[in-house]
Image (cartoon, rainbow, N blue to C red; front, side, top):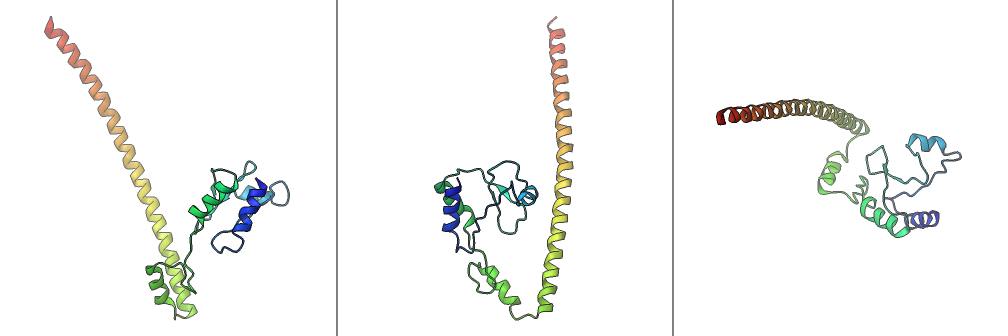
Length: 165
């Protein structure tokens, strides 16, 4: 696998959207590997933009499979706020809104967006907890209803037996 991995690294050496690295988990890289959750070797992790936690790669280990995965999943142009390359229309509009701003104004906007994302995550977590609790109620109600149906069917059968006598 190492030759194919190195070949993949060479293919993307000058690609600003993809970084191919390797860490020797048996030597100086042990701390990094533990931090990243590497338990077996070789392990391939990949990271998507704005994600701190890597994902485990489960595909083929030959150059063709690795290269195809990188091209399809990872080699995506990201928005460059300075050059506006790879930016969507809404991102360009956002950049232009803040382009001439002072450092203090940019920092204030960044703090605002950071606070917004924290609040959004809290709201999402609360909504998920509420949904989970509601689902638990429905599951309980469903089980009780199923038990009631089973009891009523038994009573129905018993009543039919009595009626036939």
